[in-house]
Length: 318
Picture: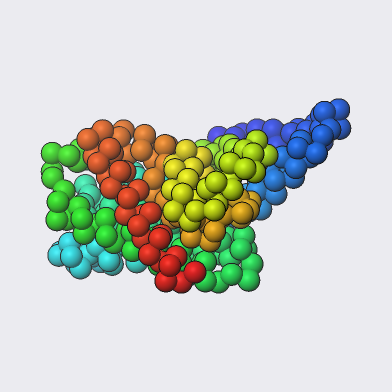
């Protein structure tokens, strides 16, 4: 029922905004307003179908696939478990909001923290929904899709290995275990709750991200952008920081990236690699789940590794 109510409320808001915004734009019509509305609408309309698909799959996995399955499939050795867990993100979609509690649950079930963290980073970054959305956002550019896959997977694996080598137990506060239920009613409630949370939460960030991207395109003077786009390094750093601030859902960030015209491909790659792994909402979620000491260290290291991986892969493939 909550899903229906929440979805209906969101549908009403979107419908009202779609009807009233053009009328308001007619009263306040200027070329910048028209351009802002065009970019905003394009990002939201293109991103919503993939957001819906991603949250459906993520909720189904959370409700139907027991976490202990991952523990049985992964090797005991963290050195071998990390790349396997990272590669699992290719076939097991999940949004970044859901990946944090799933990773905590995996750790409580005996999965090595390094492997669970590799899955936490890879699942929202390289799953099929994200890769298909990227290919549609950048038609005729398969190299960028491949670069996103390689750079994101490399970041997840490297961070897993770094945690296995340098991570300390006192930095990581494991969440309390919850009793699992296998009843159909409980699974249905888990599916509905996961779907409601992921769609409404990620959908809100999609709208905010689209508005921020449109505002960025219109409000920032071209001369300022030229100062960054003229330097590949500055462009990469700017979009890597922007990805942290915008908090765009991974199923829709490719459409936001495609709207940031004028930036080199490597900078757009950095935006799409960093966003699903390090942003403000993820830092908050990690701090609440694993503790502030973990979130600060892990997020900072992930940002550096993601930017470095994007630059290297972009130089190689783009």
